[in-house]
Image 1 (cartoon, rainbow, N blue to C red):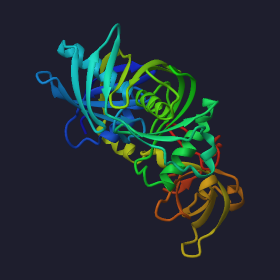
Image 2 (image 1 turned 60 degrees about the horizontal axis):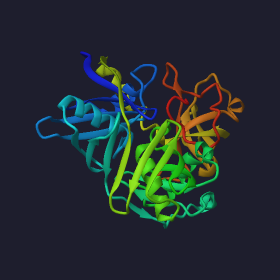
Image 3 (image 1 turned 45 degrees about the horizontal axis):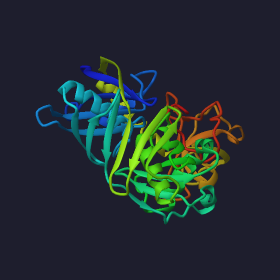
Image 4 (image 1 turned 45 degrees about the vertical axis):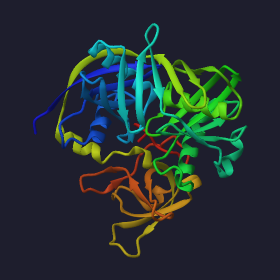
Length: 378
């Protein structure tokens, strides 16, 4: 099949980087294409891929955001500023309007290399029950809806987000019907009424240097708890955002810059392989605790029981490569997709040999049982 040649722009904001391009022809799987383009070895490399459609005459554009794992996001604050800057430069105007799945956005140039986005009016909910995780946040955690979902926790040590972020996301996805599309998890430390520090676990992308919508959600939540007032500076690893929230109107101001532009040839046959790899957010680490011949399968079929931590011990049936003896499999690290229909089952992921049998990974995952596997961890 002929390669698909795409023109793109690479942009960044507060350390988040994006590949931005026009909507491609119909029939192309945008999720699979995003997995390829965001790969930092085989593709271009980015946190998110953004597709734009529209004309300069109206100054209105349709925008879609895709995470590095191929899942689609409703919105992205940092990505929105990058798209806005590119469109403003192309149309030689100081204002553009973006239609996103998360809402209608008005974007304006600000002083220096800054862009101000008028965000959708936020909604928030303090009725969040985290079970064994409830004591993590003081005061209580808040769910903020900005067109995309955010859980905001108030903590003393924001570094815990690296381990607790995926755990909280997984817990809420399984146990709270408010989060059918999963949730971004932000850890906030309030320094004073005008300053907070933030780290965000982003669904579909993991830890990134900054999160624009996450910064907005953090300020909304802190304001709801009476912890901040007026314009608030949000410090993240990638830099600083200024968030202005007065209960009804919400504005985000921060940098955006173009890094380079170019073209890339994409083999369409190769994209079929990427379809089987996403969404990676559904993959979890586990350890084999028991293997036995399947009572219902043939002689090469085994029942495999694995420990997935907080998700419990789960079972699957699979054909194993002959190079393994059952006793050699105990303690092996595995990657599995946990069933949402049957809480006791999972699908085993691994490498396939020439006979299409599953070969288990011969190196540890370096992850805890039940921890979500992202990017190139397997």
